[in-house]
Figure (cartoon, rainbow, N blue to C red):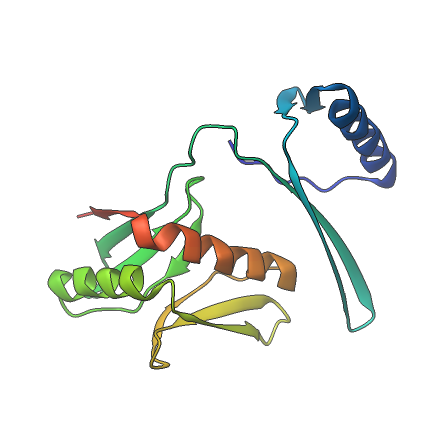
Length: 178
């Protein structure tokens, strides 16, 4: 299950109080009826970013006592133009990387293998679109483009998307969609 939610100030205050109680006394966090059990062993990181007069504080809480996470999957599929395309989906089904176009299915399969092989050493080129949306391009170690992300409203979200690609790509299942 994945969830992302924008909160009003009052909702955020209530949620943070509930989180503090759950961390202090043990228990669960209730977000819109979804109970999130808070374990004792947590990793909490803060990220603060200031850019062009806008500020952002991101609080991330991670724990590892849950079952191992599934990995994403690569899909290889034909386009209406006769070319073959690839995309990497995260475990929640969201497309996190779109690959280049290929003349044949075999070339697309080789492209996926190149992404899987190079993901750990890949270079992430963070960019901003003409409409001021953040995205990234994944480059192989030699600098050649091997994929592009979706558009994100915030730079921090694009950075998180890039980390997701690097995490999911190496062990992602490959599925041919025909």
